[in-house]
Amino acid sequence: MGNCKFIITTAVAIACGYISYVGSNELLLNCHTTDETNSVTDKTIELACESSSLNDLNQPIHSETMADDETSSIQQVALSSTIGEEPPEDISRLFLRDSEVLLKPREIQLSTGLNYSKNDLNENLRLIRFRDVSIPFSISAGITERLEVFATFPLLYAQSEFVAFNDSIKSDDNGIGDLTTGFSYKLVNESKAFPSVTGSISRTIPTGSKEDLEDSSSVRFTSNVTNFSFGLSMTKSVDPAVLFVNLGYDENSAFREDSILFKPGNSINYGFGAGFSINSAVSLSGRYYASYVKDNRVGDVLVVGSGSEPTTFNISLNYQINNKTRLETSLDFGLNDDANDSAIGFSYIYTLRRNRS
Image 1: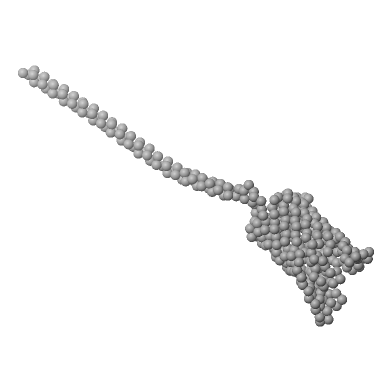
Image 2: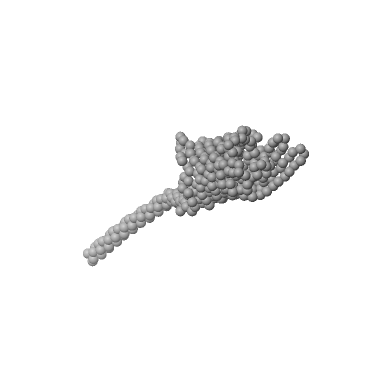
């Protein structure tokens, strides 16, 4: 009986020890698992925070990249919009259209306008007044980078008044003036040290109505002679102005009137001036020009004193409406008795430009 109690007591003690051992192991395992879970959770939270921080750091970089891409796109669009467009025209040289090659190959320039001039002459106690209104038509064409051809002729209305001893006689008429054709060729391009040099040759054909040589007060539409003109023009850019000098020579042919041979005197022409741009659309120029005209001949007789030296000052204003159209206004003032007293002119100029691919 005592042995049974001992055995039962021992079995109970062993069972209690086993249960205690298993319970402690499970408790340790649970604690370890909890610690690992907490550690994993902490690491997950830490990684999430780091990821969030990285996203926050990357966000401005991405914005800057997008901004750079947008700027680059805008620049590319702006660049693509300018590719193929013509550069702005140097309007400071527009006033040189009669003495320099300005048109590109295959470009054509048409112009017309309205000119008015007046001149009063005193001859042997007589006053003769001349009033001329002309509508000039001209066409120019660029052949090469250096060569340009041109032609011009005017429609004229002229009025003259002869005044002597409180009596006056008026006459007026209209018609076509003389036709002028020619070409200009750029001999030397402008460089840093040297000016550009352009040569020109033109011929004037007396297509206008004949002048009554015996009547100094008659309306005049023609010079009655075939004229050859040779010119040389030099221009140099001196920022902000363009300077120029012109030299020329006119050779007049003889003509016969009522079996009498008339030979107008040849002339030497010269001038100089400057032009500059006021802004992107307006340019202003001024020039001084003069001629030395030799005496005329009638038959074999030299008419002494028939020569002249007209001197004129010109101011012109160009307004560029667009790259094809512009307006030009000019004022001329005679500086001596041999020149016309004054003249004013308006021109409308249109350029047919070639297509550039």
